[in-house]
Every structure is written in C-alpha cells, then in structure tokens.
Length: 132
Image (cartoon, rainbow, N blue to C red; front, side):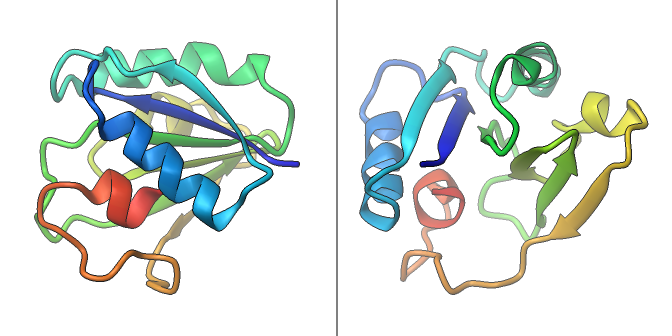
C-alpha cells in the first residue's frame, strides 16, 4: 500500500478530486492524503515551506506530489527528489529548494518517461496529465 500526498494551489474546485481519480485509476490501493490545496496561487515559497515542514510526519516510502506551477504549459522539466526515504515529484521551478538545500543524500532525477502520462497532455493541467 502506497501513501501519496498532494500539495497544490488548486483551492476548493474539482481539480484535486480529478487528480485523485487519475491516481486511483493507476493505483487503486493508494492512500491519498491532502496536505493542502490552499497554497496561495503560484506561491512557490509557501509551497516549499509546506512540504518541507510536513513530509517528515509521513512514513518512509511516501510519494509527495507538489503541484504549484507558475510555468505550467512551458518546457520546464519535472523532477523527482529522493530524500530520507521519501520521494518528491514537482516541477523544476524551485519549489523543492528547501529540501534540496538540506544536504541528506539527495538523489534528483528528471522525469522523462511518458508511459504514465495521460494522452493528450494539456497545456493547463499537468497535475492531472503528468503528475498524477
């Protein structure tokens, strides 16, 4: 059973629910935890602090998905950070900087494999089409 956390700036609309539906379609036994969907719109620093202070309260092996992305639709990359037994997926826009700067045997990879991306990938909802 895998734990997946979501930290987004989606607010109260249907987007977080849609992301969860895609995740559960791929992994029906996933335990999905909403850290918050109330990050101020495109506020990378607020999102960085939220994930930095919350991740350590989850079991090792947790996948933390962070979707706060002022650059959605651009050619920015998606990165995976492995740190202290946790995995973080986020746009390469600085949102993981606090975690990366805290030296602790970090491994950073770029996500290039499109196998699990929804087709077609929209220019405005990478949370659904790529991250989930």
